[in-house]
Length: 353
Image 1 (tube, rainbow, N blue to C red):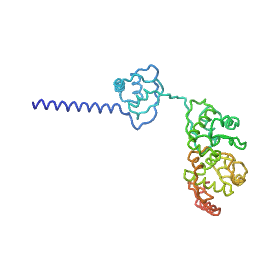
Image 2: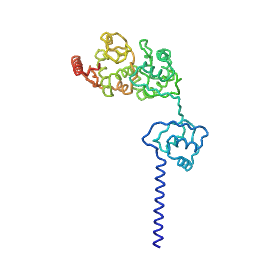
Image 3: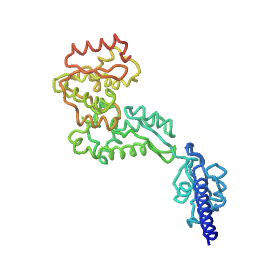
Image 4: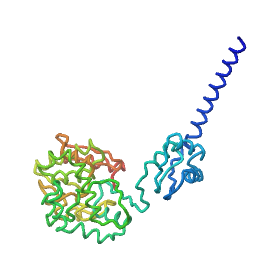
């Protein structure tokens, strides 16, 4: 009896070890080939491909460890419909994840173009990106953005576009109203109109939660946001700068914002301007002849951070601010204090130019 009992125990131990071994082998063989390798591997599964041919293809591309385990998993889970398509997979995916992707299918398009429009850039910058990534020419892109009739047609479609953008002094009616983001388009033949409406649709989504605040004077808020986008570096100092600009406007001063001068001249912000350039009268240039006035329109396409700052500024007694080349911003209450701070920055070698 004791021998029989020992034999049963031994048999159970062997069976347990066997099951554990199977479990461990299963985990190993269905695990990722290389959990650290996330580089995309393009795999094309053609119509009518069998599970065996798909398993072989995945193994040849180093995406699975075992064709047999692939087929066993399909059989055990009664999966018999893997969709033909072009996939981007990687070696960090385990067998189950790969099969789920193939089972679901996708709409991967090898001709798709991806364009990133960054915040703080102008429409001229955006047209350069459009020319670089699509079959549209820069000059044709600019022509669309300058078209007043086209701009008018969009005003009735988007609540945040108003007649203010039709001012004849504005260079590009849609400047400031395009949502900076990364966009995906079907192919390089995408039209400028399709790109614009896609960006406006995204802007509408992003601005919706601010609608009650913006609707009272959205052109003011978007213009202010575009200025502080370039003057500030984060949410907090942008809110402070908006408060300072409002203090200046309420005190009958001009904004004195250098970035508006650059835009008015359509100059790149890569070097200092001359006194003559800073004193050039222009509906955008808030350095001269613009006492108590905002620029005629936005000077770039701002981030949500800047839009929020334009709506909720920080109140203070400051009337001046200046930034050094390290992005530090200093606030002062009088022109004398401001000039002193500017000189200190220059003496330290931290002047922006």
